[in-house]
Amino acid sequence: MASGLLELCNWSTLAVCAALKLPQISALRAARSARGLSLPSLLLELAGFLVVFRYHCYYEYPLLTCLEYPLLIVQDVTLLLYMFHFQGSVHRAAPYLALFTAAWFILAVRKWIIDLAMNFCTFISAASKFAQLQCLWQSRDSGAVSALAWGLASYTCAARIITTVMTTNDLTMLIRFVIMLALNLWVTATVFYYRKAVAKAE
Image 1 (spheres, helix red, strand yellow):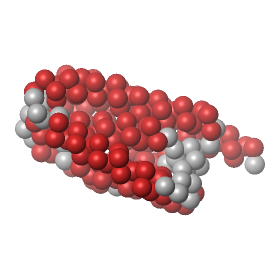
Image 2: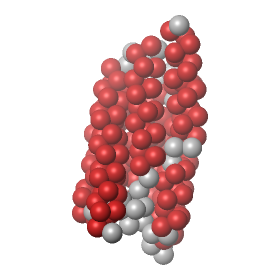
Image 3: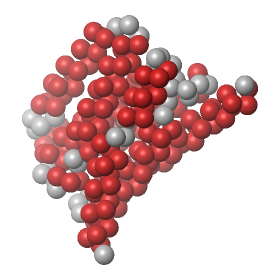
Image 4: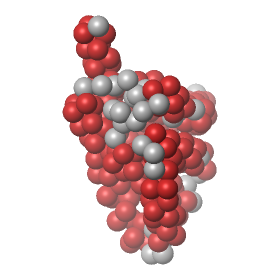
């Protein structure tokens, strides 16, 4: 029973994450605008994914507990490029991509570096969610923001709470997933709130 639940959570998380950002990419392309999307939020989220994936690799945790991160990183980079494209300045993405590439190698130079980065990672990822919330509150427009993507992100956090408890029992990761679950649900609710507000105004 327990092994079946673990397999279900692992594989369903991978399946969801393989397409997690596709609704957001699709919404962005349909809107042909990055209005309502927060660049700081996306950059912070990308940094968080990079640190967590590097942490898992450094400590050689089971591959199935972290395989979604490369998928999420690729999708976030795609979103980043689209955001800059619709702002008419794709070349502005180059310094960010160079910085993230350098960070990948620097994080594993010393154990204390990766541990420190992981401890700050929850704050970084939480800041990315708050940046997205602030952007929604300011623009009062969630037209380019996908509620489905945020809802799916909430599911993956819930599934990862279960897999973490059943495999590594890493308290740092567990706290991170609980906080991310709460914030993902908050963003999802905010997207629906502004969508209803626009519908009423029309």
